[in-house]
Image (cartoon, rainbow, N blue to C red):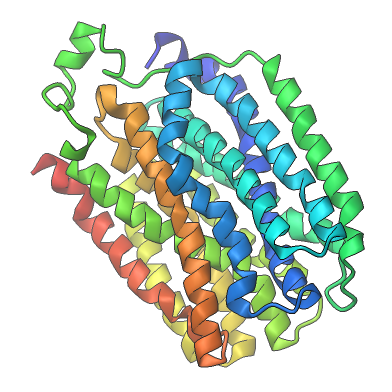
Length: 405
């Protein structure tokens, strides 16, 4: 990492800027929380069909994850961030003609283009925040970013709820909010272009730095596939993103299915759980709590909560969906730096692979929707969560240690 960014004073301003970008990622993804049940009613879709919106958004990670890493190598982190905002703006703007034409296919295209922007931005900001300071405190910085991200995820459906009424669905109501949202993304892309953000590098990433390469775990590696802790981390991250997206995006749908008032507000309860966990990360990692231990504790909470979601009465179980927010809170902040550790000159490539794992956010909602249709019961579809937390539990206690065996 560059020396200028090794002290807190050197990276406070970049932290603030990247925090805003994480907020916008969360806002763009949080839109799906209300759009899924809204479109299902408006276009008379099945549960599985409505979750294709999430699948279209997240499928871009497996398609454009690796190319995004090449883009970062070619033009740097900052320019990639700027480019991503314009993809966001185009995709979100296309929701307007999609609504005007009552076209589900156009909605999926709009979600897909927005997802390209999401992929590029995630590919840039996650490794950037990881290597912006000391690796052992990466989970602390990621927790800060998580607070911004998940707060926006909760705000998005509430914001859309001002314009879109689930009890009186009118596709024409989508015009004004999406004009506003796409305009904000264009404006932010322009603003970021004029903000000074330093280009940073991980230890050993610069192949011309002979001393760094020589001391790196990656020194004798010739392929990204020679890092077993990264590959297992990739699989674990795919499952984790799937269950996190499901907990965040499905709770509004679940509240509507149960018949609760103001279902759009329920995302905020999941977010409260996540923010509590993130605050623990900010104040306790790494001084009092290691990244590995934090992930272990969260996996235990996830295992217990996922069982209670499907075994308790529905009016009680929805609160355990919210508790999954707490379970998921420190997994991303811990898992990302654990999987990225000692990649050296393969850092950007490894980052691209991990970004591809975010496709889990496309796979799990689709499986959830299919299970809900098969069972005829949204609650029982949450059984998909339990095996996911088992895998995360394994990575926390043993999987990440493959690197040092």
